[in-house]
Image (tube, rainbow, N blue to C red; front, side, top):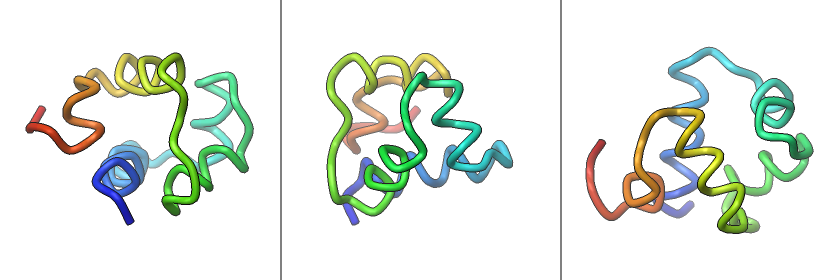
Length: 68
């Protein structure tokens, strides 16, 4: 798993969200969130930005470049 995959899953679990709930909040599919968390794919820049805004973290944090 990549840093992004681990960080996304950790943030989601910290907030007690299901993959389905996160997907709905981000305007994407449950399978996309699942694939991101398993490292099968990466979000596009638009979704990366939405994820960062949703969790109030930087894109750099999400991709493993630095802490919150």
